[in-house]
Image 1 (tube, rainbow, N blue to C red):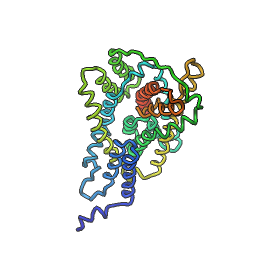
Image 2: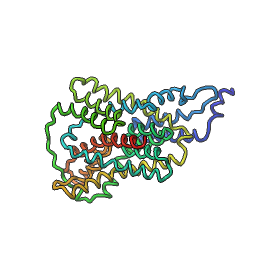
Image 3: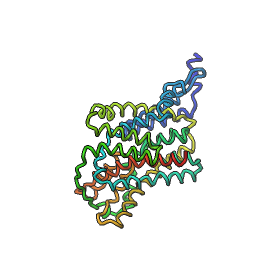
Image 4: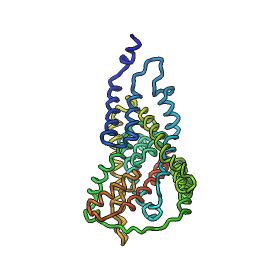
Length: 370
């Protein structure tokens, strides 16, 4: 009887509170459809890792437990984020970006929130490497956030991952507010000319190879993420690996996302999650997304001072890495202002550029602070 009651005796209030946190994440995934493929596994993983541990028996999240094994094998050695990028690369079509190379600038400008958030986090008392890990939430790219955090602040992996994926799911709520605050109705109705440019198969094949080489030379620490992203895209574009391309987009993406989510949840122990730092991280994550959006919008408005053919400032907001959600949000806003205004391709181009920009920005932070 005493053994049957051991779990109840070992149960602590903080663990019960984490069951509630896990339940909230599961609720948001199911009821609100907020990043369900990740928030649901993360929420359930948080419940699993906070189950009471009986002395003498390894817990499920300990190094000997299954979640601990997955954590050490998949996250702490950066395997899962790298595999996710193979899948993402296989899903991305870089054709709109190749047709409008100027959109690369928006992919860079929309990373502004990363560096502003690093400064704010440092001022709030985090050390510089913790601040850098928090700032990468602004990349709007979960795997990049995980990649940097495992290098710099593993003890913050749980709250940073939750913040990154939660705010990614809230892009349709966050971006319209920021965009409308920084633009006029006239600016939001600007039409952008789109010309269909034929991109040869050779260019599509050479592009991921060239980006890998250039990024690997400029920012060597980007080799893992940019390399695997471009490898996935090369599988897609080469034309002779259709089965592998479909497997990367479906089976690989689904399996790794499933394992990644529940393993991230295993880092959300009560001791690591229930503290003031978690609240600060969640607030700073919101700051990062706001400044990312603002950076892209303001950069577009700045360019409009010097160019004849004006950019719709909303396209700048699509430079964040939340692909393809942000591009869809921008097109929806454009249609609200003018039902005949179609800027989805331009927004998608900036959005794809943001995917590359976020990895480069994360690599720069790693290189500067390592």
